[in-house]
Image (cartoon, rainbow, N blue to C red; front, side, top):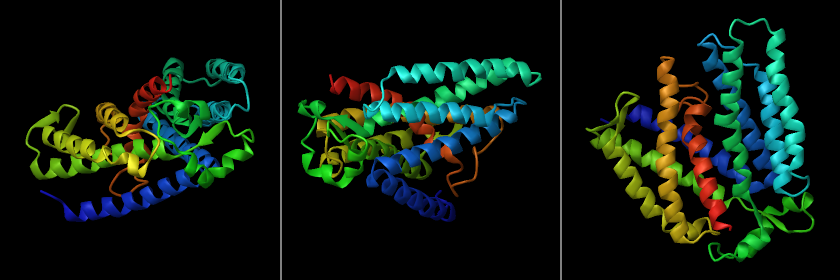
Length: 304
């Protein structure tokens, strides 16, 4: 049965979040940078709070420093402003002092603190950092038959010229917005089909409410919608949007279940309450964290 009050709350808060996300990604590379930095900071904080329930104390501000450094460096590497070697030069010492810092914290679980700190970086920071590859595209890659001509859309995102006056890198939010739309469409229709027709549990031990009916219904609607993505998001052909949708649906479903596993082990319903009807940032981006690396691999194959 549909809970209309919950559905209305989810819809309104989800719509507001959708507008903010699309707006910040569409305006340009600077607002994209701010958006990912904010999401990363909030997600790491929720992960920090979850770890505390295990009596594990992640050094939040230091892990945030490492995470923002990784993302910022990769941002400028993607724009070819700095050489990739700087990522190693800066991040390796920061990771080194993450270990050394436990010598002076006098905590009972130093190994757990280090392990959870590194897990937060692997689980949250690295996937969000890889989104740089979704929005920055080299001109020579556009010559591939896997991409549509997007020269007529460059003018909307001219702030990238501030970083890259040679114009050999293009900022375009279309792949990232299309990727997020796949997840949003799938999540929405999986929820609607699940609460309306769900009888067969998908993974009852981890997530009692998810059903095969929801998965199948959400998948079919998303694959059908992906065929018209080239008319909205451009860049990729419909065949590649279709394949990307299959990859994202599978990996996003696993990402959702993995975060449910984390919450179940802590007896939590939501990771937070920042977004009414949806929970916290981790709840909203759980699908993204595993789907980004899978999509990244596919997109890199297209650019070869």
